[in-house]
Image (cartoon, rainbow over all chains, first blue to last red; front, side):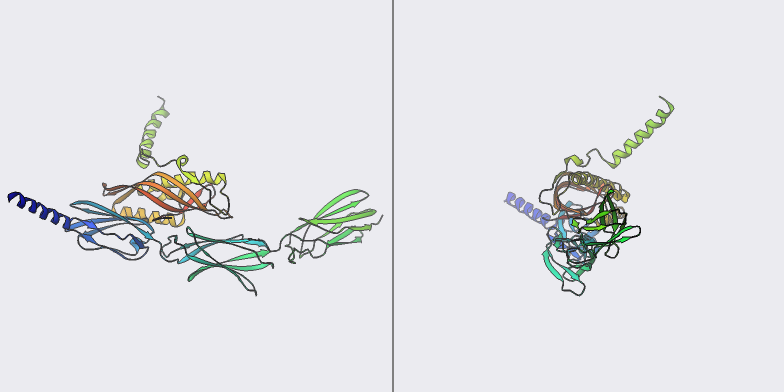
Length: 287
Length: 174
């Protein structure tokens, strides 16, 4: 009879101990930047220390009352450790805070100047961040749009993976500035890519005698899409005459390259730029 | 002992003591022990020099973070941390000072997997399976100690002579 009473008393004490032991309940996961309430149990006072990726918070708490964490306390995405210090010892729990919805996109477009008609010539990478600058690692749809002036835009949609969405688009056939836009839900970012003419596709030259030699010039130098090549593109003129061979490099200005070559007797002139070779011109120079 | 040596010896002792305070005996993972797997990263192939730099600089970044949190001085972070990651750590160190809570990290191992390396080479996105010992001290008293196996998403960007950590974010899973 006496031993039963002692056992019963022990059970009551243990149950009471269990009921009033300091503890804290944490969510498995929470969204960054959202207020959070952590339930506590037990009785008496305790100190709660919360360690997160970008914050360390300390609160005096009345056990049994919830610990309220403000938006700033849980702004960083990552692991949070909650340590409850009380007279009965310490209790530690952890949970994860994940990034909220994207608030801005870090959009890297490459290159800033792309040649025309290049397969996968324009590339973009998008890293999405939430309002508290956490990388959004959950997959999100991202739409990439390439818009030429007065033309229909090219649009492709991808889904981000590991926190990044990327795309490779063919560059347009016409030179000029194009708008390269990335958007996800209601956030977007735009970059301007300048599409420039490619290498010369073909060369045509003509020459005429001048008092100081032969003046040779190209027809307008264009790439294979019909765009004038950029100023500064080098055209090499080669002349063969009785004296031997000489070459002159000339820069394209407003689509045309010019040079004056000294010449004697029978002269053959040709031109080259990049992989393009020009026609040959034969003429008889002043003796 | 020459006059110069007499002057140098106490200075060296003091320097050694200070170093031991900042970097305790159980040092961080050296770069040579950081495993980096670059297979599967793309679209650009990760060059050997980049691999070496990333291993070295990521190890250094962890060391500077651990030292900064230990000492409560964020100035050392500038060497290997930029952007969001730098700002978050700075905020954490300010909070440490305000609350008198000290957070001590000791990285034990890192298994890095490169997951995205764009054609322009302007960033490198990695996953890190790390083992880290975490200690929390409140007013100098150890209140929590735990070894955690953490998954980090890491974004590094190149600087003039090194790679910087721009994002270091632990996630429940990859």
